[in-house]
Length: 375
Image 1 (cartoon, one colour):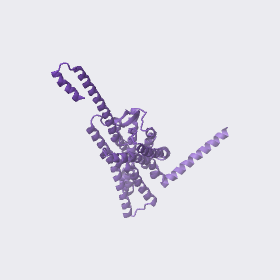
Image 2 (tube, one colour):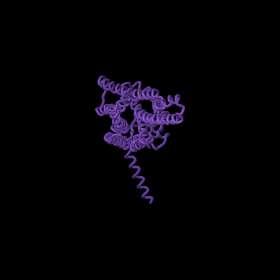
Image 3 (tube, helix red, strand yellow):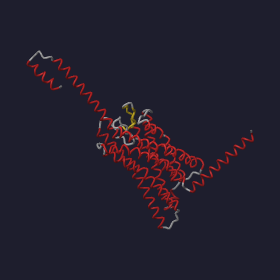
Image 4 (cartoon, helix red, strand yellow):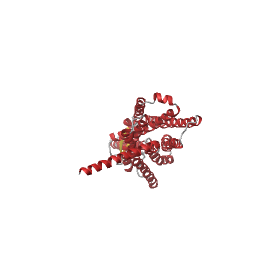
């Protein structure tokens, strides 16, 4: 069409009867049509970028291949089962730990660790229904931009606080058993409170970018809650995405994993070398903690790192769409496993739990009998 307009202008120099107005109209129509096409392509490209750079289970896509959609539907329903399982088991489990360590038992350094670990997991799981609703509604976020920001911030804050408290507990166990003099000198409630404040501040710092970058987008009658690193600068988007992903991997996974592994390996070797008595129950508790951390968090972070390199490979993108929801579900399950692995299998906790339950039942029966007598 543009070539036709040029020919018309050429003939117009020779023949003044050519209608120049028609050429201008055609040219305007051409540019409007081209601009419309560019805007459509830009919108599609933008949405593809949002899919690629949203590594925490945000792979909503329009209806394309039925077999692929059916496959992803199964994966998302399985992930929903994992999320619901984490919520159903984690809420009462962590609530019990909070109740006893916070209100029933004497305040010690150990109970403070467990209390804050349970608080971190409990708050995270408390916001989990919003995320479950988001996935169940085919990645539609009807709760507004501020809940989008708050939900993502709370989730990251408490996930990383939970990981950091696991690391602190590992260090504390090592120092308590291997360096008793140092532990007796510095293992105080005051120092433990300082460590607790530092853990929450560090977790808030890592989760802080969610308050700034989290945004909502209307697309195909859906509202997405996604990481808006930068709409108009792909290089800046890529840089921020890579930076935050590697930061979370190193600080939120690699460092805690190495710390826990070193602590427990040194603990085992030193215990054997010094002939310090250690029960088989304690050994299996330590092993269960490390294995649970590996199983729950390794797939999540590996998929996050892998996602950085496969944006333009359609096959691996499909693998990622299936892997990220399932690995996220495993990471969520760690919040309901912590009370079981760290506290509930402890004989001391079991004895205290039975005594507390017996005391509550005894008081309840006494109160009921007294009420009946008064009536």
